[in-house]
Structures are given as C-alpha cells and as structure tokens.
Image 1 (cartoon, one colour):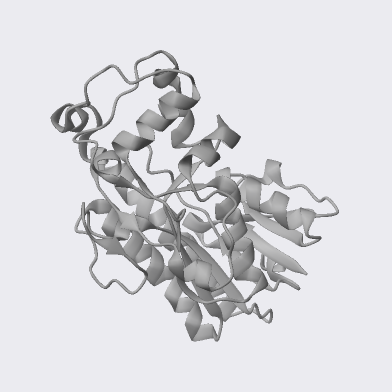
Image 2: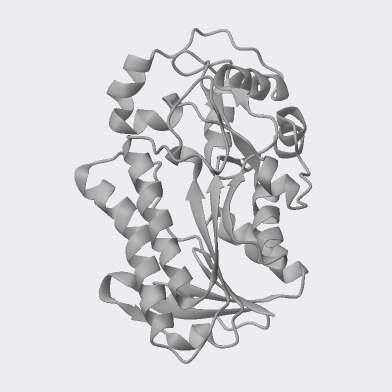
Length: 300
C-alpha cells in the first residue's frame, strides 16, 4: 500500500506520515524544494511547483490514495496579497493534481482533502453537522467553500472524495496551544472577546486517526474532525491555565482590541462554531481524547 501526501512536512502531515509508517504504508510526498527530496524505504519525495504547473507524474505510481494537506497558514496577517495566497495555495495545487491525474496513465481511487469548520456560520447556539448548507460570509468561509470545490472535481475521475472539516488542532509544539499556553504560564492568560464563543477542538492524534480511518475504510463525503465535547473560549483558557498550575486573573481581551491588533484575522478567535462529531463516530471512529482536560494532560 502506498499513498501520496501534499503538505507532508506540516503539523498534520508530519503526524500522519508517522502513523502511516507504523501501519506499514509507504508514503510519496510532494515538495516545492528540490533540496528536500529524499528517497528512503518508507518515504519518497517528488518535486512539484503548483504556480508553474509542474508535478512529477511518477509520484502517482502505485498510489491508492492522495492526502491533500497543503495550504498557506491562516495564522498570519491577512493583507490582500496574502489572502490571495491562502486561496491559491489550496485551489491551484488541487487543480494541478486533478489535471495531472486526468491526463495520466495512473489511476488513484481515493482523494482525501483537508478542510475547515470555518465554513459554518458563527453562532453561539446552533450545533452544526455535515449536512448544513449555509456558508459563513467571512473570508474563511469563502476559503473553505472554494477549497472543497477543488476537492469535488476529483469525483469526475471516478474517485471517492472525502473532505475533513477540521477544528482547532491541539498539539504540544505547534499551532494554537503553545501560543495560548505561554501567557497562561505567566498568569497573563485571558479569554477573547465575550469568551462565550464555542471552540470545537481536536487532539492531533485524533485528527490523524480520523484521516487514517477514512483512508482505511474508503469513506467518502464530508466529515467533521472535532472532539465530541466542544468548550467555550473561556473554558478553554481556564483549562489551559489549570494545567500549567495558574489561574485566570486578567479580564477578557475586548473584541475591538483584537480587531485593531489582528485586523480581519480576529475572526479566527472571535467566531463561534459548535460542531458535531457524530457522523465520524457513527462510521466507527473511537476518539482517544473526548474531553479537553484529558487532551491537555497529554499535551501540556
């Protein structure tokens, strides 16, 4: 068994390749740096350049699934030029994969794409499942909408397509958790805005576990990758502080201050998505970390 991964050196890609390796699945990966191409027993690198339409077709040989994880981070100030990069890093790369497969002798049966829960409109009350049709009007809502449209085209090739709508990923070294843990460790932690907004989170091990479960069981469709028990931002910050043996003393950071400091990107921390994990659980996935406290015990 062999898969192809884009974004293999990112947070999710690194953990996913490790899990696949443990399960004796060989990994081809695409890189935009020829210096990063390595050929090892379990991992084999191939060059691609989505902006120039270049992709080494040999990367598709004997591959039974593509994991498309590549995409520019949204945790960087959103200038007009960078917003364009966020979108194009997801859509141009998917288009290149699609056109290469369309004109290739190689056939791949499964396409699994990263996605985001930011597609759901911000709400303090509504519980979102995968059959929700409404799309958030924010920039991130638009990003996810075109991201998933890029994945849907692979159905034209007779492939099974799965889209993994991911919540806040908790990891000990990368992502949001270290950034929130640092001030909490100095008694400087504080909730954002009202603190009442829902944070649908997931432990990194469960996220890659869901990707593997979808691949192993050849699932298709949309799946929310969030833990079964979301928390409010206030509860999240208090739980982080508790696990570093501190307390929250400071008042909430006002939304207006966050908007001044972060610009449009403040929607990342101020929007509220209460998201259900029921569908993937009904497909047989058992979460290792269902509760935030247990997840933080493992990570902090």
